[in-house]
Image (cartoon, rainbow, N blue to C red; front, top):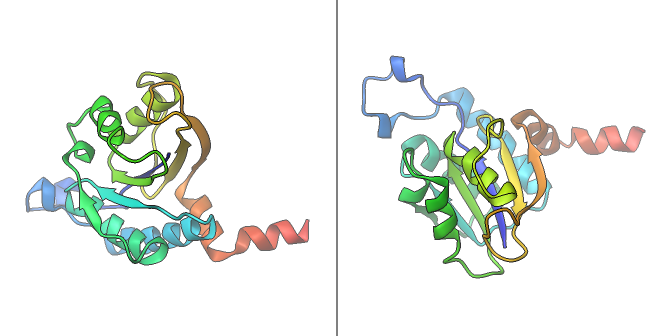
Length: 176
């Protein structure tokens, strides 16, 4: 199994939003950056079998933008396990219900995603693991979602994904 953790894009600041926290949307800049990061994921050959999101609007809209670039035939599934307030252990327990050959994209929030990465990679949440907005990490789970047994394939900042999506990385490599 592969688990791709993706943090939602830049959202309207909570202090500037009059609606409920659940409905706080992405900004226009956030949407643009998510599209660019999604192009980077596509350039990496990302081929998910499941696309799951927190029910929060900013995460769900991020997942919809990812779907357009990397998996247009998949439906975005909302999961309470990816919502703020959930625990990394809840996410890992839910991942256990997936088939072993799955590539699951989990779009959510910090500090939850960093906590999930910690549990999968070292067996417990650890400080210092955090995805930036529109950042992503791919963790291979050779024996399924077993705490401490995951193998980090890559951890990319949003800027790195944008560069991959623009093809600049390939150009730079060819010049060297």
